[in-house]
Image (cartoon, rainbow, N blue to C red; front, side, top):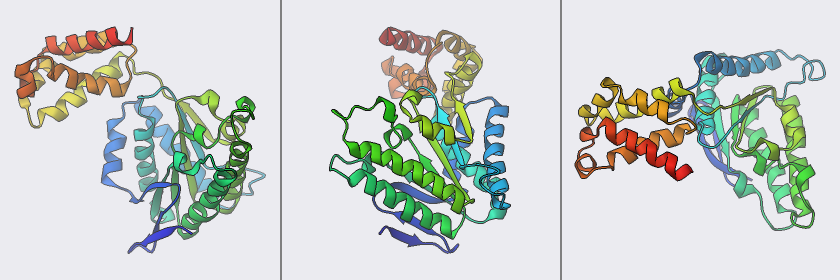
Length: 304
């Protein structure tokens, strides 16, 4: 049985096997995550509205057979495109928008902690997570669950080899599917947000249950410029002089040259640029546009 931490709002924060983290929503840190991810404004708003709409419709008591909503938003895309960070922000936005449903709890699942090489333990751990931890949280009120790297829990059974993968993996996937089906019917106040870097490894039966599927693209030049600019502006709080690379057009040139880089790599490029010269390493305000462009060239060379 999982341990819980009682809160003033009458909610409990689950803890124990399979739980990576839990907190109440809205949360300032998660609000910042929503703002940090660069996606087209209409895409961010649409994903939030669709999740809220699903919660609202399910709360009205419409029979599952008439409206088979599982309360799953599935986010796909290459590593570094911001899926996990966006999941935090999306959970926060949904909780704020659907506050009439009550106080929201956010629960992040640790998929690797659930899967075990010991025969039978993975299936039992998954069943315990869904039937006790998640159900217990949803019993108390609105709950949002993050299934990061969902392919770990819901691996494509068609591509698994029984010679190299124990039957327990198959049973664990069955337990996930059974769990989301049961929870969808019993707890209309429950929302799952799932992510995957490798959608081809996610079992089709899980993907088919998702109400919304969105694939994160690599950032285009406008998004790359916005990501670089936002990172530099954050550094400029402590080192104002660094903003010169925005004003002289260097950020735009770097964004144009950084085609194919993901958001995570773009933000780290600024650190690489600061480290290009000893002067800037000691005082980041000394970073120049040439340093930034050199960092882009180094990243592309490493990729090749």
